[in-house]
Amino acid sequence: MTFVQLIECRTSRLDEMNRLMDRWVEQTKGKRTATHSVVATDRADASHVVEIVEFPSYEEAMRNSGLPETDRIFREMVALCDEEPTFTDLDVVRDEQLYAATVRRFFELAPGQGAAPAFNDVFIEDYHDHDPANPQDVIGLDALRREVEVWRGGFDFSFTIEDQIAQEDRVCTRWTWKGHHKGEFLGIPPTGKDVTMTGTTVHRCTPDGKIAEGWWQYDRLGLMQQLGALEPTEL
Image 1: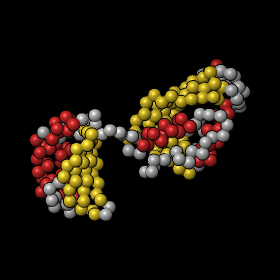
Image 2: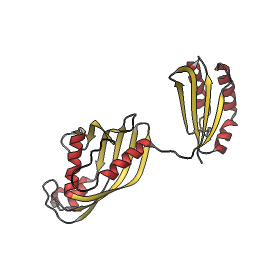
Image 3: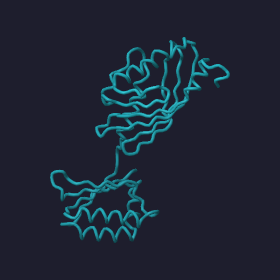
Image 4: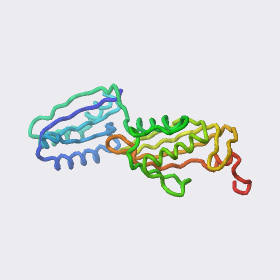
């Protein structure tokens, strides 16, 4: 079970504390068990500093506390505080990657019949889409809806998410797309064929969790080949 330690203190020497944390990161490289650390200040009281440190488990946190470097840095940190720091030990019972959840919602909403959904809770209004198959980038939520409707009109399709990695404001998704060619698509009349392709998409999200930008890479050439739209010399 993931374990989180919440450390709170008061200090007017935040810059010195940051330099101290930099030193701890450097000195414990290859030995520390902490996987994520966030330091924040209270907007209502800048002297109130909160550090959130994540560990794979409580046991790993205790191993980390036992490092001589951690003990030494902690004693120096206490000297920078106006009062003794307080510690809260937390067992994580739910950890939702909100950006990744938003991206997953798009891949769930894109398939379907007829008009595309509003997508207002998924994308910002001036969303910017980069697709190498398009001569110009798709910009704006209305343009994105029209793009989705092109695919809806041509196929009954679905996405399967194979892998997803979230880091800061980026979410990278490796997916498999499967479709049944039921209608005209880019001038290709319906073939009734079942087709598939794979791809990867990187999305950039805003602080409020909506998608602002997307970069697509997928096997469109393979799709065209399956639809019989390529001459042998084009393969």
